[in-house]
Length: 297
Image (tube, rainbow, N blue to C red):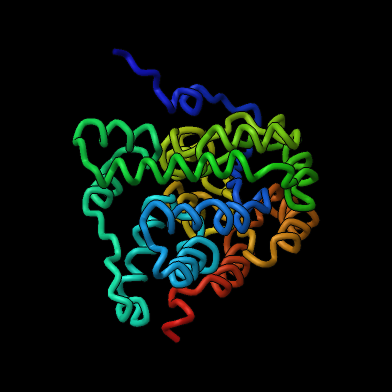
């Protein structure tokens, strides 16, 4: 059977402008990180991985990983493994005598070159008949179902629409996200901002660094490529492509977008963003995302 290339849309992209901007979605363009993780991801982690006996610790670990640490924005599967790692090392959890999952098969999937997506996981689970991978797939599908049911009517942050409109006069734009494509399409179209971007790239199209490489890597010089994101993974994707990074600071999102629309866009367009200007913004960004969880302090 011949399978369609999930990256075909990125490979077919042809620029119309001299500048390029990649934009993350959850927690960056949309204020959806809190509701998705607290109401959709975490309840399903506790349910599907049978962590009811340590639910308050599981919740704290998952919130730290996905919202309040340097792991913010990482793909759901490595994020889940990090939650398990933190729980297994937490003294209060150890005293409860609960077996914390350590699914090696899931780690092997994460370490493969496959897209970290449900379709790729489903294929591997079917080929290996691994109960652990089936469990991970069931969890991931349940998360998507919860999001589809729960997350509606959450608008973009203030100044996102204005920023996209301003950028559209001189830059090509795509969405660069680890979120499933179906959810991205729904959210960007629901709020009528999908019209500003040429491609909406989700987890099925590969890693964020691949999105940027396929769409912009061989076409634009690094100083004319800007990645906008709210997580260190967004910055890493930019750096992997020699691109610039504009941080949306967690907890200061509205302020970040106001500054971007009012000043940083013009600095980028003028070719003066690289260097000390970018470095100062990144320093402020990294200061709000710790590596050590609060219960270790």
